[in-house]
Image 1 (cartoon, rainbow, N blue to C red):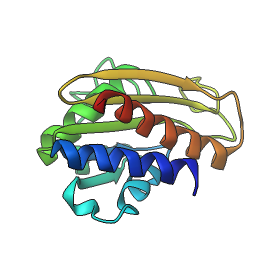
Image 2 (cartoon, rainbow, N blue to C red; image 1 turned 180 degrees about the horizontal axis):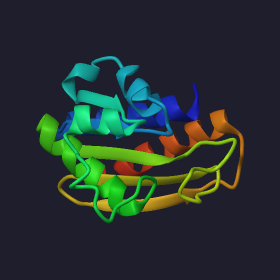
Image 3 (cartoon, one colour; image 1 turned 180 degrees about the vertical axis):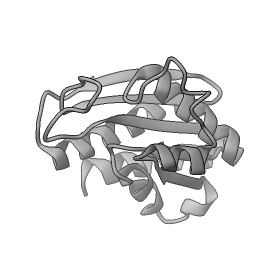
Length: 159
């Protein structure tokens, strides 16, 4: 079993035990966070929904975050990740909102972040934000690392 599947199983068990739910919004993890959670049998007991928000159009359509709300913010930053987590939680009415945004690679993004940069945020009974720097240009490995880190952050807050 992969590290991603293993941690998703532990997170799922804790969410079910606590009778809590999660909504996910991710970009550079490419849907791996949601896929890992949905691969757990009984996912409908804790997973409400998710979206891969990769463009401005997707952000506006799925989360209702327009240019006015983005004033002073940029993608791939901790404040942006916090906004995404709060918004997905609000939109889906979940116990937890989990967000990831970054640069998977092999190149960095237009904001100057190197490949392997990801910001992860949680909105819920507690809030949390962190930045991960893998220093790798391996896109697939970074995507996996971002997903594992996001689920590990949630697992740590679930106790």
